Image (cartoon, rainbow, N blue to C red; front, top):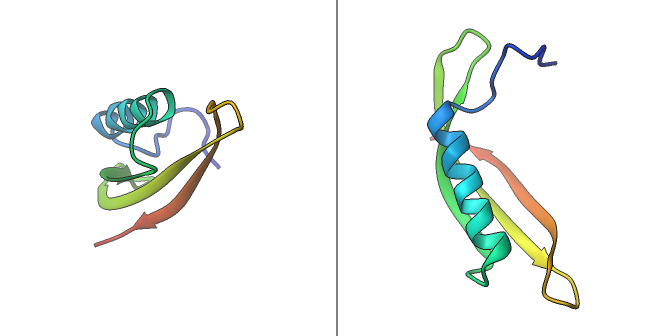
Length: 74
């Protein structure tokens, strides 16, 4: 469990994730996003990985659900 001082993503990975999410949730683009990120161990060490998510839309073409796949470690 995270206590508030710990991070799951490296700072640059967080920025890239939210940019990808905003691009695909609010613009009509491809259905899924494949990207890379760096996760952080509790000790602060980096773990490079990749992830995938899709944004599902409702009847009015508004983003309503984000479906993610677990990280894939190289």
